[in-house]
Image (tube, rainbow, N blue to C red):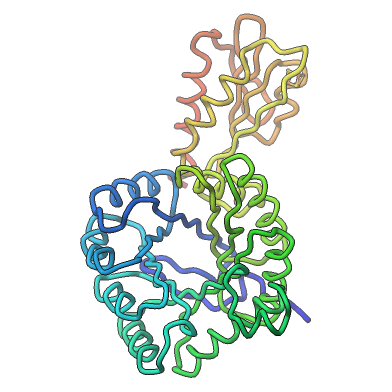
Length: 359
Ligand code: SF4
């Protein structure tokens, strides 16, 4: 059976962004603040926006949170997703408050009239619904059928929720099938792409701390992304959500799926090293986080193999005794004093990024 790759999924409009229907993969994250604390939530969203987050989700566990949506919406620039479990009144409030997408499983809402109320409100405002299947909370009947969480069971659950929406002629749907078991998540997304043509939201849930979670999420989502599956993703980390965005961006860059972020190339260092490469690489990595052009910046420990090894770099420096060599596409353009080489590199990075963005 053939799969639906991200280009072939149904395009779904989330605020001013389209998810699905193209090869773009949108980066999401979720706030860690209490949603009713508007000030703290907005502050965190601004940090996420700055880091490159394109869609942000907030939890909506109670009425206070739902009441805060309209105020949060006024103060942020990226689409806002409101995460609701079961309570259809909170979903209605969130839609009324200006949510750009809601995450709710229609099969968990309860009575038909409640489902219809949510779907009609979403339809009226053009608000899509994300169905979020989680291996850890599959329906009882599915668990009984399969014995334990399986990829088939997860897809069956997703199809059940999709069917409820389709019966109400609702098609602005995005689907996630998260699991903390990486192999299960990969299998579930592969199977989903065989049966579902709505955009898929990728994630490895409860993946762990910044270090372990980064490895786990990258391994899992990398395998899925490389097959052409997935139109949006969230890296879940027990860490500052800004880190989730950074990992997401890096992952997309790895697969050539990012056209708005700079990439750092840095050598592993060896006995030929002539400069304090590790701290320079970290400084440059931090600096290019805010660059919105897909340029490549290299930082190399020496000039022996340096510039030639990083021929694809738009700009780079290689250490030489007491100085640095500034190079473009493998060709040395000038020598710079060691003390100022990082600053000179930053100026060149800005210039090349500006040139690229002006094209
Ligand atoms: Fe070693 Fe130079 Fe290569 Fe870095 S660039 S790994 S210092 S040879």
